[in-house]
Length: 92
Image (cartoon, rainbow, N blue to C red; front, side, top):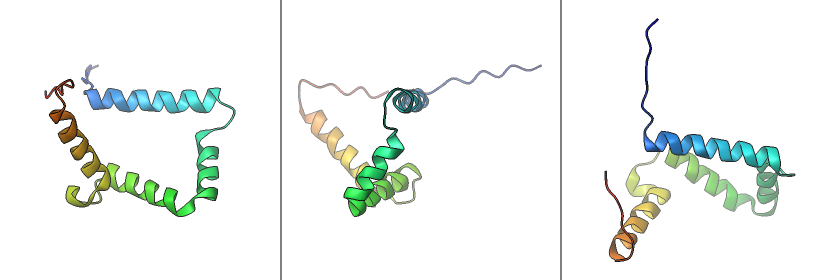
């Protein structure tokens, strides 16, 4: 039997932490995240539909970076943080 060892990247670990968090929230809280989303959609349908579409388009790379509002937001945030002398961004 051949043993395959896969080294997780930091982003892989971040996805696992996010999944664990979502599971923990859905198990421990009275209201599940999907029920909360139902409430949000009922109150502000178009806003949350747009947010969900933006997140889907961003994560699936359906839109070029120059049109992706989430990508542009993070690029702007990194530029802003690089200007601040008290914050250090580590590039690997």
